[in-house]
Image (cartoon, rainbow, N blue to C red):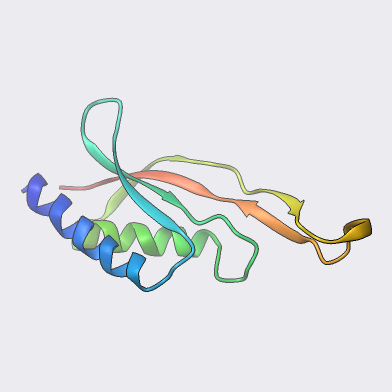
Length: 102
């Protein structure tokens, strides 16, 4: 069952990455050796928020659901811009690690 779960998650992630989403979901292994997913939905645009992270977690695990193993704080900093700091973007760092339920 675990293998099928991972295969389904990888197939779903491949489709979403082809769609051009700015966030990423990567298969990883947790300290206890179980498979999990590292999800990064950092960014400065309105579509990059915690909701996007939870949506990607749902796609990765499907109907099984998931547990959040760790989650970064929502820190931000100004990036880019021009002379004098004009037109800079407030970039938020958002990432979490999840484990699919079985």
